[in-house]
Image (tube, rainbow, N blue to C red; front, side, top):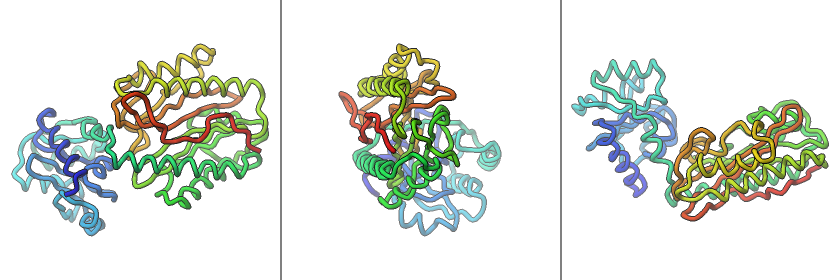
Amino acid sequence: MSAAVTSRLERCRGLLGGLGVDALLVSAAADVRYLSGFRGADATLLVGADFAFICTDARYWDQVREEVDGFALVEVRGELLDGSVGALRATGAKGRLGIQGAALSYASYRTVRRRYGGGLRDVGAAVTRLRAVKDADEIAVMRRAGRVTDEALAAVVAGGLVGRREMDVAWRLREEYQRLGAEGEAFPAIVAGGAHGAQAHAIPGERVIAAGELVVIDTGARVDGYCSDITRTFAAGQPTDELRRIYDVVLAAQLAGLAAVRAGAHGRDDVDAASRAVIDAAGHGARFGHGTGHGVGLEVHEAPGLGRTQGDTLAAGMVCTVEPGIYVEGLAGVRIEDTVLVTADGCERLTTATKELQVVD
């Protein structure tokens, strides 16, 4: 068993007592991958004090044997959860079973409850939060993901923006990720020009980018399962003075947020507050409606939180984003985002593309 799998499995087992459960049924796909290394779909893990099973069907048995070390394979020949709980019962387990309620549909929950016959306890995000602090191997992969993201974005923007459809720019990002050896994009890219950019999660479409507009591009590569996340706002041709002023406020807010990131800082009280104070002071507080950041890893949104209403205390080894924005309905949106590694006394940017306003024809 690899050192990483051994460490992760033991930390997972270490949760049992504190959660008041005798075993854990892990069904969230990212947690399955983190604990076992399995990259496929449709698998669950069963973790107890003296057993560790990975349960899946015939489509993945050979893949499990290639990728997974430290978990015994349970060859399920029917419904996955039914077979998983059947394997647990075969161990003689009768105590309380921890489940990940957010990863189970109500129908799936009913299947587990009926098949197990014992007590169930929703353990919430306890297993998922094991992933919050990254180890050295994860950090190395996420540095690569950041470099790929920077390079792909630069290559696509070098082709110009004026006269291109938003959806074509988004498509070119996917092509660049593949060319650079990534698995693909971490999430569907946002490409939004002009007034469309005032939608924080705009969907790129047929709209043609016009001269004089700001263009928000939010994208990220996925490398070896791990995500990157960057947003840059570009000027498609010369912007107005008003648009430049808005951009400058967001840049100052993002720099203030980055300066607040360090081990021991709080995502809400320190990082979000620092960015939000700059935007509030400029009179745009009502135009910044989302949180300043989020954790990144095997999922593009995970712990820690850096929101305006809730957040987490940061620790060295966590990876998160800092992404304030201003959205002016009918005019434009501006967002600037980096993925950063939290360190003892600050942060390391994993996405390093310039944040000075770039004017692109």
